[in-house]
Image (cartoon, rainbow, N blue to C red; front, side, top):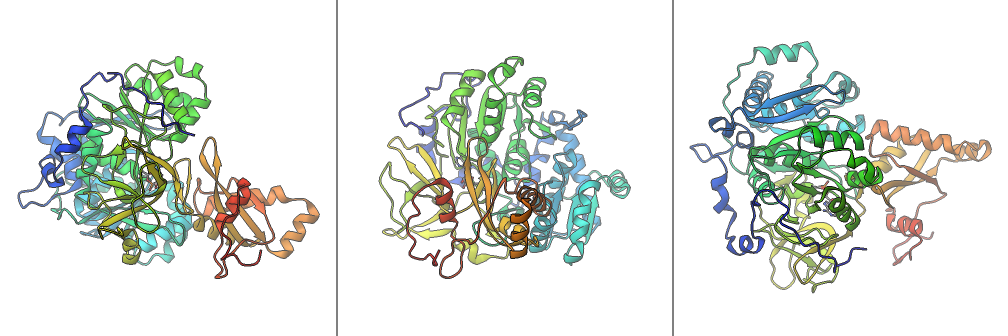
Length: 585
Ligand code: 6R9
Protein backbone atom coordinates (compact mmCIF):
# COMPACT_ATOMS: atom_id res chain seq x y z
CA UNK A 1 0.00 0.00 0.00
CA UNK A 2 1.25 3.45 -0.87
CA UNK A 3 2.53 5.46 2.02
CA UNK A 4 1.53 9.03 2.24
CA UNK A 5 4.68 9.80 4.16
CA UNK A 6 7.26 8.90 1.56
CA UNK A 7 8.02 12.10 -0.23
CA UNK A 8 10.53 12.02 -3.01
CA UNK A 9 12.18 15.43 -3.06
CA UNK A 10 12.75 16.41 -6.63
CA UNK A 11 16.39 17.16 -6.95
CA UNK A 12 17.25 19.65 -9.60
CA UNK A 13 17.66 16.66 -11.87
CA UNK A 14 16.45 18.34 -15.01
CA UNK A 15 19.09 19.48 -17.41
CA UNK A 16 16.70 22.07 -18.80
CA UNK A 17 14.53 24.53 -16.89
CA UNK A 18 11.07 22.92 -16.72
CA UNK A 19 8.27 24.42 -18.80
CA UNK A 20 6.20 24.74 -15.64
CA UNK A 21 8.68 26.17 -13.12
CA UNK A 22 6.12 26.68 -10.35
CA UNK A 23 2.94 24.66 -10.15
CA UNK A 24 1.45 26.90 -7.47
CA UNK A 25 2.04 30.06 -9.47
CA UNK A 26 0.51 28.53 -12.58
CA UNK A 27 -2.58 27.47 -10.64
CA UNK A 28 -2.97 30.89 -9.07
CA UNK A 29 -2.52 32.85 -12.26
CA UNK A 30 -4.84 30.65 -14.35
CA UNK A 31 -7.97 32.53 -15.40
CA UNK A 32 -9.48 30.86 -18.44
CA UNK A 33 -8.55 28.40 -21.20
CA UNK A 34 -9.10 30.94 -23.95
CA UNK A 35 -6.12 32.92 -22.56
CA UNK A 36 -3.94 30.11 -23.96
CA UNK A 37 -5.44 30.09 -27.44
CA UNK A 38 -2.47 32.12 -28.63
CA UNK A 39 -0.54 28.85 -28.51
CA UNK A 40 -2.78 27.47 -31.27
CA UNK A 41 -2.62 28.38 -34.95
CA UNK A 42 -5.97 29.61 -36.19
CA UNK A 43 -6.86 30.32 -39.81
CA UNK A 44 -7.80 33.90 -40.66
CA UNK A 45 -11.49 33.06 -40.29
CA UNK A 46 -10.84 31.89 -36.66
CA UNK A 47 -11.31 28.27 -37.61
CA UNK A 48 -8.74 25.57 -36.87
CA UNK A 49 -7.53 22.10 -37.79
CA UNK A 50 -5.76 19.79 -35.36
CA UNK A 51 -3.51 18.29 -38.06
CA UNK A 52 -2.47 21.78 -39.16
CA UNK A 53 -1.53 22.50 -35.55
CA UNK A 54 0.42 19.28 -35.18
CA UNK A 55 2.46 19.53 -38.38
CA UNK A 56 1.78 22.32 -40.90
CA UNK A 57 2.39 25.27 -38.57
CA UNK A 58 6.04 24.17 -38.17
CA UNK A 59 6.70 24.41 -41.91
CA UNK A 60 7.01 28.17 -41.65
CA UNK A 61 9.56 27.85 -38.82
CA UNK A 62 13.06 26.54 -38.16
CA UNK A 63 11.51 23.12 -37.53
CA UNK A 64 10.68 22.60 -41.22
CA UNK A 65 13.53 20.15 -41.75
CA UNK A 66 13.73 18.92 -38.19
CA UNK A 67 13.17 15.18 -37.68
CA UNK A 68 9.58 14.67 -36.52
CA UNK A 69 9.65 10.88 -36.58
CA UNK A 70 12.34 8.25 -36.20
CA UNK A 71 10.70 4.99 -37.15
CA UNK A 72 12.10 1.54 -36.51
CA UNK A 73 10.26 -1.54 -37.72
CA UNK A 74 10.08 -4.83 -35.88
CA UNK A 75 12.68 -6.27 -38.25
CA UNK A 76 15.06 -3.37 -37.62
CA UNK A 77 14.40 -1.31 -40.75
CA UNK A 78 14.86 2.40 -40.00
CA UNK A 79 13.27 5.46 -41.57
CA UNK A 80 13.12 9.11 -40.67
CA UNK A 81 10.63 11.81 -41.54
CA UNK A 82 11.03 15.55 -41.13
CA UNK A 83 8.11 17.83 -40.35
CA UNK A 84 8.21 18.80 -44.01
CA UNK A 85 8.01 15.12 -45.06
CA UNK A 86 4.95 14.58 -42.85
CA UNK A 87 3.42 17.78 -44.19
CA UNK A 88 3.75 16.56 -47.79
CA UNK A 89 2.70 12.98 -47.07
CA UNK A 90 -0.38 13.98 -45.08
CA UNK A 91 -1.34 16.43 -47.86
CA UNK A 92 -1.08 13.61 -50.39
CA UNK A 93 -3.07 11.25 -48.18
CA UNK A 94 -5.70 13.97 -47.76
CA UNK A 95 -5.98 14.31 -51.57
CA UNK A 96 -6.19 10.54 -52.04
CA UNK A 97 -9.00 10.27 -49.50
CA UNK A 98 -10.87 13.20 -51.05
CA UNK A 99 -10.57 11.52 -54.44
CA UNK A 100 -12.14 8.40 -52.97
CA UNK A 101 -15.10 10.46 -51.85
CA UNK A 102 -14.23 11.14 -48.21
CA UNK A 103 -15.95 14.31 -47.05
CA UNK A 104 -16.13 16.54 -44.01
CA UNK A 105 -17.59 14.74 -40.97
CA UNK A 106 -17.36 11.27 -42.58
CA UNK A 107 -15.61 8.68 -40.41
CA UNK A 108 -12.42 7.01 -41.62
CA UNK A 109 -10.64 4.37 -39.53
CA UNK A 110 -7.05 3.22 -39.47
CA UNK A 111 -6.36 -0.43 -38.75
CA UNK A 112 -2.59 -0.69 -38.90
CA UNK A 113 0.40 -1.58 -36.78
CA UNK A 114 2.62 1.30 -35.63
CA UNK A 115 4.03 2.12 -39.06
CA UNK A 116 4.56 5.54 -40.68
CA UNK A 117 1.44 5.25 -42.86
CA UNK A 118 -0.68 5.19 -39.70
CA UNK A 119 0.60 8.61 -38.73
CA UNK A 120 0.30 10.48 -42.00
CA UNK A 121 -3.05 8.86 -42.87
CA UNK A 122 -4.42 9.97 -39.48
CA UNK A 123 -3.33 13.53 -40.24
CA UNK A 124 -4.62 13.27 -43.82
CA UNK A 125 -8.10 12.28 -42.61
CA UNK A 126 -8.17 15.27 -40.26
CA UNK A 127 -7.07 17.56 -43.08
CA UNK A 128 -10.13 16.44 -45.08
CA UNK A 129 -12.22 17.52 -42.09
CA UNK A 130 -13.34 13.92 -41.59
CA UNK A 131 -13.28 12.15 -38.22
CA UNK A 132 -10.19 9.95 -37.79
CA UNK A 133 -10.55 6.73 -35.83
CA UNK A 134 -7.95 4.18 -34.81
CA UNK A 135 -8.18 0.44 -34.22
CA UNK A 136 -5.65 -1.78 -32.43
CA UNK A 137 -4.03 -4.17 -34.87
CA UNK A 138 -4.85 -6.92 -32.34
CA UNK A 139 -8.58 -6.54 -33.03
CA UNK A 140 -10.51 -9.48 -34.43
CA UNK A 141 -13.62 -9.45 -36.67
CA UNK A 142 -16.15 -8.95 -33.85
CA UNK A 143 -14.29 -5.96 -32.37
CA UNK A 144 -14.00 -4.47 -35.88
CA UNK A 145 -17.64 -5.01 -36.72
CA UNK A 146 -18.79 -3.32 -33.50
CA UNK A 147 -16.69 -0.23 -34.14
CA UNK A 148 -17.00 0.15 -37.91
CA UNK A 149 -20.71 -0.62 -37.77
CA UNK A 150 -21.58 1.84 -35.00
CA UNK A 151 -19.47 4.66 -36.47
CA UNK A 152 -20.79 3.98 -40.01
CA UNK A 153 -17.24 4.36 -41.23
CA UNK A 154 -16.84 5.12 -44.94
CA UNK A 155 -13.18 4.19 -45.34
CA UNK A 156 -10.83 1.86 -43.54
CA UNK A 157 -7.07 1.99 -44.07
CA UNK A 158 -5.27 -1.26 -43.36
CA UNK A 159 -2.56 -3.55 -44.74
CA UNK A 160 -2.62 -6.83 -46.64
CA UNK A 161 -2.27 -8.95 -43.53
CA UNK A 162 -5.01 -7.31 -41.47
CA UNK A 163 -7.32 -6.80 -44.42
CA UNK A 164 -8.53 -10.40 -44.24
CA UNK A 165 -10.22 -9.72 -40.91
CA UNK A 166 -12.09 -6.78 -42.42
CA UNK A 167 -13.14 -8.78 -45.47
CA UNK A 168 -14.80 -11.34 -43.17
CA UNK A 169 -17.29 -8.77 -41.91
CA UNK A 170 -17.47 -6.41 -44.86
CA UNK A 171 -20.90 -7.68 -45.93
CA UNK A 172 -22.26 -6.46 -42.58
CA UNK A 173 -21.03 -2.91 -43.14
CA UNK A 174 -23.21 -1.18 -45.75
CA UNK A 175 -21.59 2.22 -45.14
CA UNK A 176 -18.04 1.03 -45.74
CA UNK A 177 -17.16 2.19 -49.25
CA UNK A 178 -13.41 1.51 -49.40
CA UNK A 179 -11.04 -0.92 -47.76
CA UNK A 180 -7.63 0.52 -48.57
CA UNK A 181 -4.49 -1.53 -48.11
CA UNK A 182 -1.32 0.54 -47.78
CA UNK A 183 0.57 -2.41 -49.33
CA UNK A 184 -1.63 -2.39 -52.36
CA UNK A 185 -0.28 -1.18 -55.69
CA UNK A 186 -3.33 1.00 -56.25
CA UNK A 187 -2.83 2.96 -53.02
CA UNK A 188 0.90 3.34 -53.59
CA UNK A 189 0.24 4.63 -57.11
CA UNK A 190 -2.43 7.02 -55.88
CA UNK A 191 -0.06 8.39 -53.24
CA UNK A 192 2.68 8.86 -55.85
CA UNK A 193 0.40 10.69 -58.22
CA UNK A 194 -1.42 12.82 -55.64
CA UNK A 195 -0.60 16.52 -55.36
CA UNK A 196 1.55 17.32 -52.34
CA UNK A 197 -0.38 20.47 -51.51
CA UNK A 198 -3.97 20.53 -50.36
CA UNK A 199 -6.70 22.68 -48.92
CA UNK A 200 -6.78 21.86 -45.21
CA UNK A 201 -10.40 21.96 -43.98
CA UNK A 202 -11.17 24.97 -41.81
CA UNK A 203 -13.06 23.56 -38.85
CA UNK A 204 -14.98 25.09 -35.98
CA UNK A 205 -13.08 24.50 -32.73
CA UNK A 206 -15.87 22.17 -31.55
CA UNK A 207 -16.13 20.17 -34.79
CA UNK A 208 -15.26 16.48 -34.52
CA UNK A 209 -11.64 15.53 -35.16
CA UNK A 210 -11.10 11.99 -33.90
CA UNK A 211 -12.95 9.17 -32.19
CA UNK A 212 -12.03 6.11 -30.20
CA UNK A 213 -14.07 3.22 -28.93
CA UNK A 214 -13.78 2.46 -25.28
CA UNK A 215 -15.36 -0.02 -22.91
CA UNK A 216 -17.74 0.44 -20.03
CA UNK A 217 -19.35 -2.16 -17.80
CA UNK A 218 -22.25 -3.03 -20.04
CA UNK A 219 -23.05 -3.10 -23.71
CA UNK A 220 -20.84 -2.69 -26.72
CA UNK A 221 -17.87 -0.31 -26.74
CA UNK A 222 -18.83 3.34 -27.07
CA UNK A 223 -17.50 5.88 -29.54
CA UNK A 224 -15.87 8.73 -27.63
CA UNK A 225 -15.71 11.75 -29.93
CA UNK A 226 -13.17 14.58 -29.63
CA UNK A 227 -13.00 18.02 -31.20
CA UNK A 228 -10.28 19.89 -33.06
CA UNK A 229 -9.75 22.27 -30.16
CA UNK A 230 -8.80 19.33 -27.89
CA UNK A 231 -5.30 19.87 -29.25
CA UNK A 232 -5.04 22.95 -27.02
CA UNK A 233 -5.20 20.74 -23.91
CA UNK A 234 -2.92 18.11 -25.45
CA UNK A 235 -0.43 20.81 -26.39
CA UNK A 236 -0.40 22.44 -22.93
CA UNK A 237 -0.18 19.17 -21.01
CA UNK A 238 2.59 17.83 -23.28
CA UNK A 239 4.44 21.03 -22.39
CA UNK A 240 3.70 21.11 -18.64
CA UNK A 241 3.61 17.41 -17.75
CA UNK A 242 5.80 15.67 -20.33
CA UNK A 243 7.98 18.78 -20.27
CA UNK A 244 8.73 18.56 -24.00
CA UNK A 245 11.45 20.92 -25.23
CA UNK A 246 12.82 21.47 -28.71
CA UNK A 247 16.02 19.67 -27.74
CA UNK A 248 14.18 16.51 -26.73
CA UNK A 249 13.98 13.15 -28.38
CA UNK A 250 10.76 11.73 -27.11
CA UNK A 251 9.49 8.17 -26.99
CA UNK A 252 5.85 7.46 -26.24
CA UNK A 253 5.51 3.68 -26.25
CA UNK A 254 1.71 3.73 -26.64
CA UNK A 255 -0.12 2.41 -29.69
CA UNK A 256 -2.38 5.00 -31.38
CA UNK A 257 -5.19 2.46 -31.00
CA UNK A 258 -5.13 3.83 -27.44
CA UNK A 259 -5.92 7.47 -26.69
CA UNK A 260 -2.40 8.02 -25.34
CA UNK A 261 -0.97 7.30 -28.79
CA UNK A 262 -3.25 9.86 -30.44
CA UNK A 263 -2.94 12.64 -27.88
CA UNK A 264 0.77 12.30 -27.10
CA UNK A 265 2.33 10.55 -30.10
CA UNK A 266 0.58 12.56 -32.82
CA UNK A 267 -1.23 15.68 -31.64
CA UNK A 268 0.16 17.22 -28.42
CA UNK A 269 3.72 16.05 -28.93
CA UNK A 270 4.15 17.19 -32.54
CA UNK A 271 2.33 20.44 -31.84
CA UNK A 272 5.24 21.09 -29.45
CA UNK A 273 7.66 20.43 -32.31
CA UNK A 274 9.44 17.50 -30.68
CA UNK A 275 11.38 14.69 -32.37
CA UNK A 276 9.53 11.42 -31.73
CA UNK A 277 10.61 7.81 -31.81
CA UNK A 278 8.20 5.09 -32.89
CA UNK A 279 9.08 1.43 -32.56
CA UNK A 280 6.76 -0.97 -34.33
CA UNK A 281 7.59 -4.09 -32.31
CA UNK A 282 6.18 -5.46 -29.10
CA UNK A 283 7.60 -5.10 -25.62
CA UNK A 284 11.02 -6.61 -25.12
CA UNK A 285 13.23 -5.40 -22.27
CA UNK A 286 16.49 -5.59 -24.24
CA UNK A 287 15.04 -4.01 -27.34
CA UNK A 288 13.51 -1.18 -25.31
CA UNK A 289 16.80 -0.32 -23.63
CA UNK A 290 18.46 -0.48 -27.04
CA UNK A 291 15.94 2.01 -28.44
CA UNK A 292 16.40 4.36 -25.48
CA UNK A 293 20.16 4.27 -25.99
CA UNK A 294 20.34 4.32 -29.79
CA UNK A 295 18.01 7.27 -30.26
CA UNK A 296 19.32 9.11 -27.18
CA UNK A 297 15.79 9.38 -25.83
CA UNK A 298 15.42 12.19 -23.30
CA UNK A 299 11.69 12.08 -22.49
CA UNK A 300 9.98 8.72 -22.13
CA UNK A 301 6.23 8.16 -21.67
CA UNK A 302 5.16 4.61 -20.90
CA UNK A 303 2.84 2.49 -18.73
CA UNK A 304 3.14 0.61 -15.42
CA UNK A 305 2.94 -2.91 -16.89
CA UNK A 306 5.98 -2.19 -19.06
CA UNK A 307 7.83 -0.69 -16.09
CA UNK A 308 7.07 -3.77 -13.98
CA UNK A 309 8.31 -5.99 -16.81
CA UNK A 310 11.53 -3.98 -17.02
CA UNK A 311 11.92 -4.36 -13.26
CA UNK A 312 11.42 -8.11 -13.63
CA UNK A 313 14.13 -8.23 -16.32
CA UNK A 314 16.58 -7.30 -13.55
CA UNK A 315 18.93 -4.48 -12.64
CA UNK A 316 21.93 -6.05 -14.36
CA UNK A 317 20.44 -5.77 -17.83
CA UNK A 318 19.89 -2.03 -17.64
CA UNK A 319 23.52 -1.48 -16.63
CA UNK A 320 24.65 -2.59 -20.11
CA UNK A 321 23.16 0.51 -21.70
CA UNK A 322 24.10 4.15 -21.71
CA UNK A 323 20.86 5.87 -20.84
CA UNK A 324 22.42 9.12 -19.72
CA UNK A 325 20.30 11.12 -22.16
CA UNK A 326 17.14 10.38 -20.22
CA UNK A 327 15.85 13.54 -18.57
CA UNK A 328 12.20 12.99 -17.69
CA UNK A 329 10.06 9.85 -17.25
CA UNK A 330 6.26 9.66 -17.21
CA UNK A 331 3.71 6.90 -16.78
CA UNK A 332 -0.03 6.50 -17.40
CA UNK A 333 -2.80 3.96 -17.73
CA UNK A 334 -2.92 2.13 -14.41
CA UNK A 335 -1.82 2.74 -10.85
CA UNK A 336 1.94 3.12 -10.70
CA UNK A 337 3.28 1.20 -7.72
CA UNK A 338 5.54 3.18 -5.38
CA UNK A 339 8.09 0.39 -5.88
CA UNK A 340 8.29 1.29 -9.59
CA UNK A 341 9.03 4.93 -8.79
CA UNK A 342 11.76 3.98 -6.33
CA UNK A 343 13.22 1.43 -8.74
CA UNK A 344 13.45 3.93 -11.59
CA UNK A 345 15.09 6.41 -9.24
CA UNK A 346 17.65 3.72 -8.47
CA UNK A 347 18.41 2.47 -11.97
CA UNK A 348 17.84 5.57 -14.12
CA UNK A 349 18.58 8.15 -11.44
CA UNK A 350 15.11 9.56 -12.27
CA UNK A 351 11.69 8.81 -10.79
CA UNK A 352 8.72 7.95 -13.02
CA UNK A 353 6.10 10.68 -12.88
CA UNK A 354 2.61 9.23 -12.74
CA UNK A 355 -0.29 10.99 -14.43
CA UNK A 356 -3.99 10.26 -14.74
CA UNK A 357 -6.55 10.72 -17.47
CA UNK A 358 -9.06 8.82 -19.61
CA UNK A 359 -10.16 8.37 -23.22
CA UNK A 360 -13.09 10.64 -22.37
CA UNK A 361 -10.96 13.44 -20.90
CA UNK A 362 -8.86 13.71 -24.08
CA UNK A 363 -5.78 14.85 -22.18
CA UNK A 364 -3.88 14.53 -18.92
CA UNK A 365 -5.88 15.98 -15.99
CA UNK A 366 -3.90 15.00 -12.87
CA UNK A 367 -0.13 14.75 -12.82
CA UNK A 368 3.20 14.86 -11.08
CA UNK A 369 5.17 17.76 -12.56
CA UNK A 370 8.96 17.94 -12.94
CA UNK A 371 9.10 20.87 -10.53
CA UNK A 372 6.96 19.23 -7.84
CA UNK A 373 7.82 16.73 -5.12
CA UNK A 374 6.55 13.25 -5.86
CA UNK A 375 4.68 11.16 -3.34
CA UNK A 376 5.20 7.69 -4.80
CA UNK A 377 1.84 6.03 -5.32
CA UNK A 378 -0.02 9.30 -5.90
CA UNK A 379 -1.34 10.44 -9.28
CA UNK A 380 -0.34 14.01 -8.40
CA UNK A 381 -2.29 17.24 -8.61
CA UNK A 382 -4.77 18.64 -11.16
CA UNK A 383 -3.46 20.49 -14.22
CA UNK A 384 -3.58 24.28 -13.72
CA UNK A 385 -7.13 25.21 -14.75
CA UNK A 386 -8.58 21.82 -13.76
CA UNK A 387 -10.73 21.43 -10.65
CA UNK A 388 -10.93 17.89 -9.31
CA UNK A 389 -12.83 16.74 -6.23
CA UNK A 390 -14.05 13.62 -4.44
CA UNK A 391 -17.77 13.02 -3.95
CA UNK A 392 -19.89 10.48 -2.12
CA UNK A 393 -22.64 8.60 -3.94
CA UNK A 394 -25.15 11.35 -3.09
CA UNK A 395 -23.19 14.03 -4.91
CA UNK A 396 -21.72 15.65 -1.81
CA UNK A 397 -18.03 16.46 -1.46
CA UNK A 398 -16.19 14.32 1.10
CA UNK A 399 -13.42 15.54 3.43
CA UNK A 400 -9.70 14.99 2.80
CA UNK A 401 -8.47 11.41 3.11
CA UNK A 402 -11.95 10.01 2.55
CA UNK A 403 -12.46 7.73 -0.43
CA UNK A 404 -15.15 8.56 -2.96
CA UNK A 405 -15.89 9.22 -6.63
CA UNK A 406 -13.33 11.26 -8.55
CA UNK A 407 -15.03 14.07 -10.47
CA UNK A 408 -13.79 16.96 -12.63
CA UNK A 409 -15.39 20.33 -13.25
CA UNK A 410 -16.22 20.76 -16.95
CA UNK A 411 -15.40 22.24 -19.51
CA UNK A 412 -11.75 21.83 -20.25
CA UNK A 413 -10.82 22.02 -23.97
CA UNK A 414 -10.39 18.26 -24.52
CA UNK A 415 -13.48 16.96 -22.73
CA UNK A 416 -15.20 14.57 -25.16
CA UNK A 417 -17.88 16.24 -27.29
CA UNK A 418 -20.25 13.28 -27.37
CA UNK A 419 -20.65 9.54 -27.33
CA UNK A 420 -21.31 8.62 -30.93
CA UNK A 421 -25.05 8.12 -31.48
CA UNK A 422 -25.60 7.73 -27.72
CA UNK A 423 -26.50 11.15 -26.31
CA UNK A 424 -28.09 9.56 -23.25
CA UNK A 425 -24.89 7.73 -22.44
CA UNK A 426 -23.01 11.03 -22.80
CA UNK A 427 -25.35 12.77 -20.36
CA UNK A 428 -24.91 9.95 -17.85
CA UNK A 429 -21.28 11.06 -17.31
CA UNK A 430 -22.44 14.25 -15.58
CA UNK A 431 -24.08 14.93 -12.23
CA UNK A 432 -25.03 17.96 -10.17
CA UNK A 433 -23.38 18.69 -6.86
CA UNK A 434 -25.94 18.28 -4.07
CA UNK A 435 -25.68 21.65 -2.35
CA UNK A 436 -24.53 23.96 -5.11
CA UNK A 437 -26.16 22.35 -8.15
CA UNK A 438 -22.90 22.78 -10.05
CA UNK A 439 -22.25 20.36 -12.89
CA UNK A 440 -19.40 17.81 -12.63
CA UNK A 441 -17.93 15.11 -14.88
CA UNK A 442 -17.93 11.71 -13.16
CA UNK A 443 -14.80 9.70 -13.96
CA UNK A 444 -15.93 6.27 -12.78
CA UNK A 445 -12.78 6.00 -10.66
CA UNK A 446 -12.61 5.84 -6.86
CA UNK A 447 -9.91 7.97 -5.24
CA UNK A 448 -9.08 10.22 -2.29
CA UNK A 449 -7.23 13.47 -1.82
CA UNK A 450 -4.68 14.27 0.87
CA UNK A 451 -4.27 17.56 2.71
CA UNK A 452 -1.50 18.68 0.36
CA UNK A 453 -3.86 18.33 -2.58
CA UNK A 454 -2.41 15.10 -4.03
CA UNK A 455 -4.88 12.57 -5.45
CA UNK A 456 -4.59 8.83 -4.75
CA UNK A 457 -6.20 6.19 -6.95
CA UNK A 458 -8.22 3.44 -5.28
CA UNK A 459 -9.96 1.54 -8.09
CA UNK A 460 -12.78 1.61 -10.60
CA UNK A 461 -16.30 2.24 -9.38
CA UNK A 462 -17.56 -0.15 -12.06
CA UNK A 463 -16.47 -3.51 -13.49
CA UNK A 464 -14.19 -2.12 -16.21
CA UNK A 465 -10.97 -4.12 -16.44
CA UNK A 466 -7.49 -2.64 -16.99
CA UNK A 467 -5.14 -5.35 -18.13
CA UNK A 468 -1.62 -4.32 -19.12
CA UNK A 469 -3.03 -0.80 -19.34
CA UNK A 470 -5.71 -1.78 -21.86
CA UNK A 471 -9.30 -1.00 -21.01
CA UNK A 472 -11.56 -4.01 -21.50
CA UNK A 473 -15.28 -4.29 -20.85
CA UNK A 474 -16.33 -7.55 -19.19
CA UNK A 475 -19.46 -7.67 -21.33
CA UNK A 476 -17.47 -7.85 -24.57
CA UNK A 477 -15.48 -10.82 -23.31
CA UNK A 478 -18.61 -12.51 -21.96
CA UNK A 479 -20.33 -12.07 -25.34
CA UNK A 480 -17.36 -13.51 -27.18
CA UNK A 481 -17.31 -16.56 -24.90
CA UNK A 482 -21.02 -17.15 -25.23
CA UNK A 483 -20.62 -17.25 -29.01
CA UNK A 484 -18.73 -20.54 -28.56
CA UNK A 485 -21.01 -23.59 -28.92
CA UNK A 486 -19.95 -25.11 -25.59
CA UNK A 487 -20.72 -21.99 -23.50
CA UNK A 488 -24.12 -21.19 -22.02
CA UNK A 489 -23.13 -18.23 -19.89
CA UNK A 490 -20.03 -16.41 -18.75
CA UNK A 491 -19.13 -13.87 -16.06
CA UNK A 492 -15.89 -11.95 -16.44
CA UNK A 493 -13.85 -10.05 -13.84
CA UNK A 494 -10.48 -8.34 -13.48
CA UNK A 495 -8.28 -10.34 -11.10
CA UNK A 496 -5.40 -8.44 -9.47
CA UNK A 497 -2.05 -9.47 -10.96
CA UNK A 498 1.38 -8.31 -9.84
CA UNK A 499 2.65 -7.84 -13.41
CA UNK A 500 -0.33 -6.86 -15.54
CA UNK A 501 -2.27 -4.88 -12.93
CA UNK A 502 -5.24 -7.12 -13.61
CA UNK A 503 -5.79 -10.20 -15.70
CA UNK A 504 -9.10 -11.23 -17.22
CA UNK A 505 -10.72 -14.16 -15.45
CA UNK A 506 -13.83 -15.83 -16.83
CA UNK A 507 -16.32 -18.00 -14.99
CA UNK A 508 -18.01 -20.17 -17.57
CA UNK A 509 -21.18 -22.25 -17.42
CA UNK A 510 -20.94 -25.05 -19.98
CA UNK A 511 -23.68 -26.52 -22.07
CA UNK A 512 -24.69 -29.87 -20.47
CA UNK A 513 -23.34 -32.30 -23.08
CA UNK A 514 -19.97 -30.53 -23.16
CA UNK A 515 -19.83 -30.52 -19.39
CA UNK A 516 -20.35 -34.24 -19.22
CA UNK A 517 -17.87 -34.91 -21.99
CA UNK A 518 -15.22 -32.91 -20.17
CA UNK A 519 -15.88 -34.61 -16.86
CA UNK A 520 -15.52 -37.98 -18.51
CA UNK A 521 -12.50 -37.36 -20.68
CA UNK A 522 -10.69 -34.91 -18.38
CA UNK A 523 -10.09 -32.61 -21.35
CA UNK A 524 -10.70 -29.46 -19.38
CA UNK A 525 -7.36 -27.92 -20.24
CA UNK A 526 -7.93 -28.43 -23.94
CA UNK A 527 -11.29 -26.67 -23.82
CA UNK A 528 -9.82 -23.78 -21.83
CA UNK A 529 -7.18 -23.30 -24.52
CA UNK A 530 -9.79 -23.54 -27.22
CA UNK A 531 -11.94 -20.88 -25.54
CA UNK A 532 -8.94 -18.59 -25.09
CA UNK A 533 -8.00 -18.90 -28.76
CA UNK A 534 -11.63 -18.33 -29.72
CA UNK A 535 -11.84 -15.02 -27.83
CA UNK A 536 -8.43 -13.89 -29.08
CA UNK A 537 -9.43 -14.45 -32.68
CA UNK A 538 -12.89 -12.98 -32.44
CA UNK A 539 -12.30 -10.03 -30.16
CA UNK A 540 -8.68 -9.06 -29.69
CA UNK A 541 -5.30 -10.54 -28.94
CA UNK A 542 -5.12 -8.83 -25.55
CA UNK A 543 -8.72 -9.24 -24.42
CA UNK A 544 -8.80 -12.99 -23.75
CA UNK A 545 -9.26 -14.58 -20.32
CA UNK A 546 -5.92 -15.81 -18.99
CA UNK A 547 -7.87 -17.80 -16.42
CA UNK A 548 -11.06 -19.76 -17.04
CA UNK A 549 -13.00 -21.59 -14.37
CA UNK A 550 -16.03 -23.75 -15.10
CA UNK A 551 -18.91 -23.30 -12.67
CA UNK A 552 -22.48 -24.58 -12.47
CA UNK A 553 -24.28 -21.27 -12.09
CA UNK A 554 -23.50 -17.55 -12.14
CA UNK A 555 -24.58 -15.26 -9.31
CA UNK A 556 -27.30 -12.97 -10.68
CA UNK A 557 -29.60 -10.23 -9.53
CA UNK A 558 -33.29 -10.92 -9.40
CA UNK A 559 -33.54 -8.99 -12.66
CA UNK A 560 -31.03 -11.35 -14.25
CA UNK A 561 -27.81 -9.27 -14.29
CA UNK A 562 -24.58 -11.09 -13.61
CA UNK A 563 -23.19 -9.93 -10.24
CA UNK A 564 -19.51 -9.68 -11.09
CA UNK A 565 -18.89 -8.11 -7.71
CA UNK A 566 -19.73 -11.44 -6.09
CA UNK A 567 -17.56 -13.44 -8.47
CA UNK A 568 -14.70 -11.11 -7.63
CA UNK A 569 -15.23 -11.25 -3.86
CA UNK A 570 -15.31 -15.04 -3.99
CA UNK A 571 -12.20 -15.17 -6.13
CA UNK A 572 -10.32 -12.94 -3.71
CA UNK A 573 -11.74 -14.54 -0.59
CA UNK A 574 -13.37 -11.28 0.48
CA UNK A 575 -16.72 -10.72 2.15
CA UNK A 576 -19.52 -10.83 -0.40
CA UNK A 577 -21.25 -7.66 0.86
CA UNK A 578 -24.84 -6.69 0.22
CA UNK A 579 -26.69 -9.58 -1.40
CA UNK A 580 -30.20 -8.22 -1.09
CA UNK A 581 -30.63 -8.13 -4.87
CA UNK A 582 -29.03 -11.53 -5.36
CA UNK A 583 -31.19 -14.24 -6.81
CA UNK A 584 -31.10 -17.44 -4.78
CA UNK A 585 -27.58 -18.78 -5.24
C1 6R9 B 1 -5.22 7.37 -20.57
C2 6R9 B 1 -6.00 6.15 -20.22
C3 6R9 B 1 -8.78 5.24 -18.18
C4 6R9 B 1 -8.76 4.51 -16.86
C5 6R9 B 1 -9.01 5.42 -15.69
C6 6R9 B 1 -8.32 4.64 -14.57
C7 6R9 B 1 -7.11 4.04 -15.26
C8 6R9 B 1 -5.39 5.75 -16.05
C9 6R9 B 1 -4.18 5.97 -14.27
C10 6R9 B 1 -5.21 5.06 -13.99
C11 6R9 B 1 -4.46 4.80 -11.83
C12 6R9 B 1 -3.25 6.28 -13.21
N1 6R9 B 1 -5.94 4.94 -15.13
N2 6R9 B 1 -4.31 6.38 -15.55
N3 6R9 B 1 -5.35 4.48 -12.79
N4 6R9 B 1 -3.44 5.66 -12.01
N5 6R9 B 1 -2.23 7.13 -13.38
O1 6R9 B 1 -5.52 5.28 -19.53
O2 6R9 B 1 -7.28 6.08 -20.74
O3 6R9 B 1 -7.69 3.69 -21.46
O4 6R9 B 1 -9.58 5.36 -21.18
O5 6R9 B 1 -8.39 4.38 -19.22
O6 6R9 B 1 -7.47 3.94 -16.63
O7 6R9 B 1 -9.17 3.63 -14.12
O8 6R9 B 1 -10.38 5.61 -15.48
P1 6R9 B 1 -8.27 4.84 -20.73
